[in-house]
Amino acid sequence: MVHLTGDEKSAVAALWSKVNVDEVGGEALGRLLVVYPWTQRFFESFGDLSSAAAVMGNPKVKAHGKKVLGAFSDGLTHLDNLKGTFAQLSELHCDKLHVDPENFRVCKKVPEGLQIGSTCAFYRENVGNKSKRTVQSING
Image 1 (cartoon, rainbow, N blue to C red):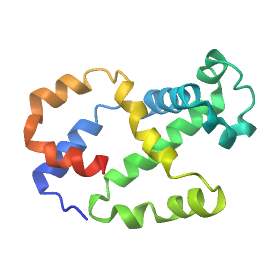
Image 2: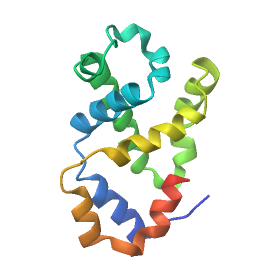
Image 3: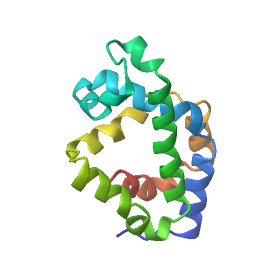
Image 4: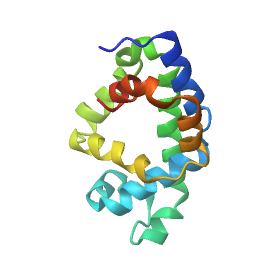
């Protein structure tokens, strides 16, 4: 387990505070479902996922994306106990939903393609290379 310094925790919190969870969550999940269509099988109850436009406009996709990033936000308030914070979600996705762990690696790629307002500029200006270890620990 990686232990973050106080400065690293502050950098993560400052960076994440720039993310609009409501907007970005739905966008990220929508892109995941469009770019990796096999992941749609977990969301059959969401209704019409027949095209990129249908996915991106689907209110259930947007709501669930917001929920996912909300859980991630919660995890960021417990950086010293991420394992415990996400234990229930891990159990749900692994044991009950049988989500292939590879899908979580794919999930990490989706936000890389999102334009999250001024987050990248904020990162370069305020965090820079001093948090390289932090970013590497988050990315696994």
